[in-house]
Length: 295
Image 1 (cartoon, rainbow, N blue to C red):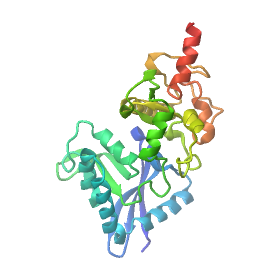
Image 2: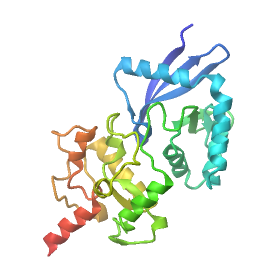
Image 3: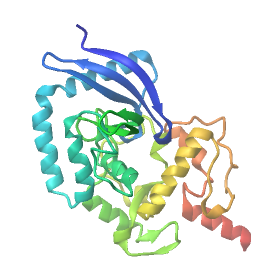
Image 4: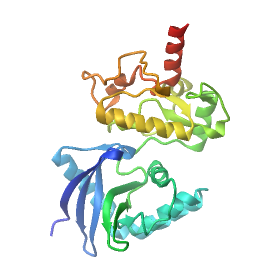
């Protein structure tokens, strides 16, 4: 028997994610799961069949059932050390590593999508299946499936320590780039100007701890969580449609126009050139250029 069988491929367009639904065949278990092959939180974006096969083989090894119990214990310790009971309450039912129905097996939460996003930002690999039939509640509901991979996935995603976060906020002088003013630091998050949805496997750095103050000023801006999520959605639409967004309803670009340049790739470090001139990419530069025109 082969180690795994690929069942199908599918897209989750709302999240700009792609999956391979697969059955992993272990000696003690036949496990039906879903492996993300486009998943920006871990920098995965695979299309070539050989690359997909090699990646699934790596996931197969890392997700071996012999490792499950140790992995569960490590994650429980992780959540015990965090003050995040609401998000943890959604995480814990996923430790079955089976498709889990949002409607009847997960806590009801008015901001469920945000809580799932929190899990992904913690580095977890969570597969999503919209409108999957649940035999328990007899409805089509969103289902989630957690893969027991190391936080950050087989590759990884840029994260920062609490100490670095505090340093970044201090370096950027607690300046809310959306509001254009200094605000209380506890309400602000460092935001990559270059959106992660356009990263590839060569964009992410192994560590941010060696960032200089000049690096922080050049590559980051501070936003509230609400504006950070708003920017993510704008950048996702831009990535999918090629239509660049604009803040405050003001259709102004200090470089380029409303269309993503066909001369610039959609992913990778070179893609950052396509973001230049967009207000969401650098709100302060956009504001400065617009004020210069207005006099």
